[in-house]
Image 1: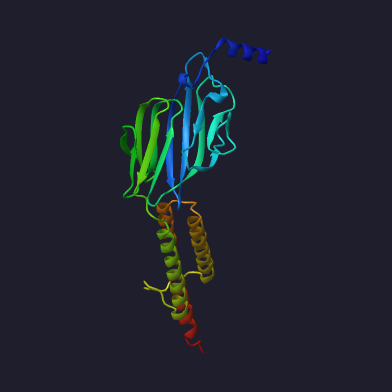
Image 2: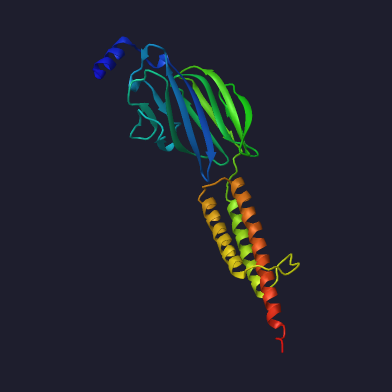
Length: 283
């Protein structure tokens, strides 16, 4: 009964083509070492009463893209064998969300994306983190704005009313040639912390010593080991690009400050213990 009802509904709707579809798209660009990580999120909307065949719309990635993957939240869409385009696997009868990811190579400090839009775009936007020197231009008029998300500034380029089969070109320049400087900075800090720890143990002194505190050396040593381990894990996560530089720097600074306090407590406790052991015993 249900199958018959769905078939009758499809028959009642008029067959359409890609010309009977409009869309909105958001193109999100993230920078990696040698490539760009790009996500495209499409909203496809057919005209009321129109049924669009599954093979009528193909969302192609720009030439040069690789490792295309469909987002897990997307259903009713498949990628071709070449992993260069996404098409629907079922007729389009109502608004549908399609999202996919791919890698795109940088050329020096820039990148150029170009492709024909398959349907009319009512709205579109290109989104990227606002880094110094970054410039983005599109082949169609766009408006630039910025947005603060949890302390991270993003630049957004909005465009509207793009006819189907328009050659949409996006040019990005001013990328940092490499993003390894934060990792080198982290390695230098780690070495400095290690050297400082050795110096503090051998000399039994630490910067900022002012008075002996009644603390437990065992608990302080355990806390020191925990902090050193946390710093190592943080640096591994950052090296694997699992977090943004700003978040890494903020967390690294917090851990370093805590480690400095613990080292200070350890040194004071050891000094106090040494002072007590050097006092002559009572008669």
